[in-house]
Length: 282
Image 1 (cartoon, one colour):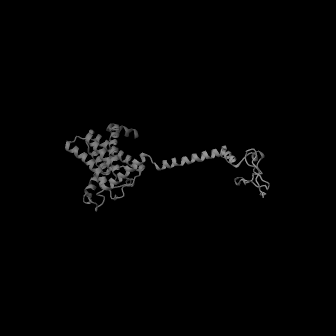
Image 2 (cartoon, helix red, strand yellow):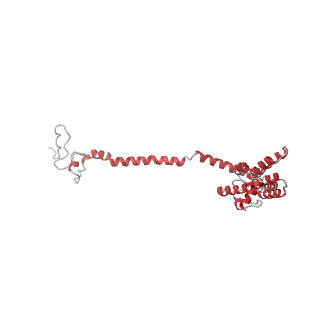
Image 3 (cartoon, helix red, strand yellow):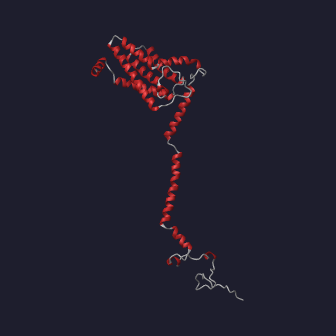
């Protein structure tokens, strides 16, 4: 006996008929009815696969996908910039680490119980020999006692160079504001507020400038010239051994003092020039 739910035959070799006598659809993939609220031109002759394909090709969807793709590509690039610092920054960080390590290793006279603590009094004596106050006082005394015009001219320019050194070192220390090494003991002779900063070493600048000045303007025998160079080197070395400065502080101080001497030669004052300047100010 034939079943009452017989399917409609296929017409002309085409696709099977979707509807049946009881209003149901034959294929399970097409069981969802069409949207009755959509416009007629969308209800006719369209299937869900075609609608999804057209929606995916819409301009809005393409713009959204392109923007999301662009943002996804930008994030790794930004992360790469943050995770790959510049070569200069890495080099400076490495040099700073080496500077701190060398300074701490060479600070063998930082306190009495250090490995070279017994040499600390000698290092402090060398420190005082490069201090600014003894140099200013000694130069002023020689300028006052000198009875020759040449001697007065030399001592006058040395005194002006010492004042220039104090001003320039104070300015650089106030700008850089680098702290002294952690193993340093603040028991220096006649310190001021700016002396709590480390860069550059004022003793090193003064030793380099005065050493060049004495070698250029005083007639000294070869042993004395060697002693001047040795004194300047020992002053710079004592700053590191005592833990007062880092190695780079002393190296920059030597370079700065060397340049300061060139500035003194450019601004050289004769007694006549100084008297003329004082007459104009008066």
